[in-house]
Amino acid sequence: MPGPPPIPTNLKVMRGNPGKRALNKREPKPTLADPACPEHLDPVAKQEWDRLLPILRTMRVLTEADGILLANLCSALATQYKAQTEMQKTGLLVRRGKPDAPWYQISPLQSIINEQMQIVRGLCADFGLSPASRARVQTVAEPEKRDERWAVILNK
Image 1 (cartoon, rainbow, N blue to C red):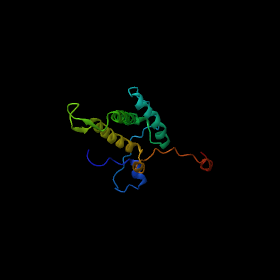
Image 2: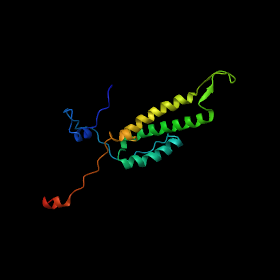
Image 3: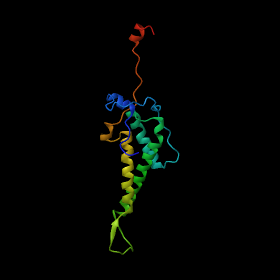
Image 4: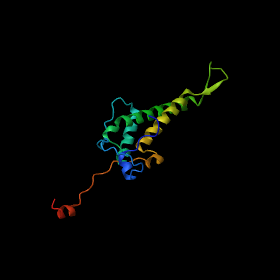
């Protein structure tokens, strides 16, 4: 579907529903919880999982439904790190053709790095992990605390 992603209902409500369109009252609300780390992640991706999980938990943007996106983010970061590490060994330019050829080209690893950077950027924006995206991400609200004074007054 072309166009910008839909705005979450709770964010529309906070803004006063400027478009005056009907609100989605049946929008899914996953439980605020840490998803389990998938077994298929490689060690570097698992390190990223362990690094990002407390950050996202503190930001209150992680729900039980976000495990797949977080795993994709961690895998993309791991692939990017591996490609960058390998390119540090081989260099940005590689010989094209025979080993003694005078022509050089940019390492094919650079296109892998660029692709992973785009994936990481998009997923970080989804989680509010960049300065610009934090302003657009709505956190899961904490449950309202019950005011005991009202409970006494209302005899509840």
